[in-house]
Length: 184
Ligand SMILES: [Zn+2]
Image 1 (cartoon, rainbow, N blue to C red):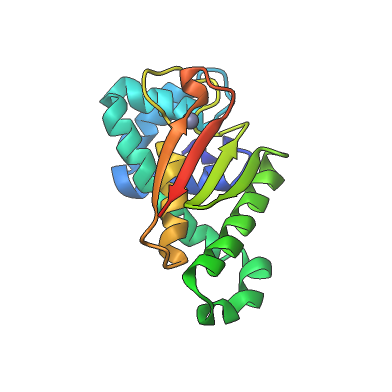
Image 2 (tube, helix red, strand yellow):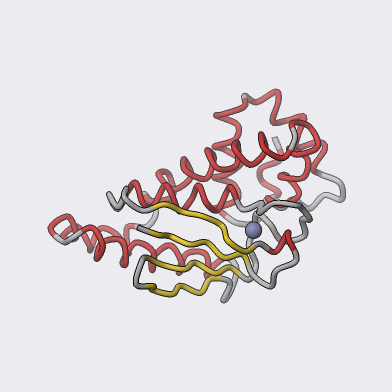
């Protein structure tokens, strides 16, 4: 399978999660469709999945994959996370603050200055200029199911399960950024 063609770890983790969900055979077929010019992106993979299964199924798959990704990525965030074991003693909202910052740093390492995090009275706003799931795609609905899943996975880890994630603006709809609202 051509997961090596994805430059960033996050992308490779999404592909691995998709393989778990779909099985190797089905994913190989999608990967062949997606590899139009030898370079892979999650957005391109999303287009191929959409062509095969329709946009709703594609978004559901990406969302599930996104949720799984965070669990495996988290092991690598030892610098950010192990030092913060004490956070188990902190209120969930403060733990979530830290976790969102760590996650945004991680995205910004792979896609420089892509994430802008804003705290709202009711939660957070996660803005992505270069959303790896949506950039280069066009749709009639937001297409950041994968990113939504990643954020949902984080809420689960931070035990902030009273929050919900909604993509309220999307590059695929012609907006300047993808905007995810993390709301209580
Ligand atoms: Zn989007």
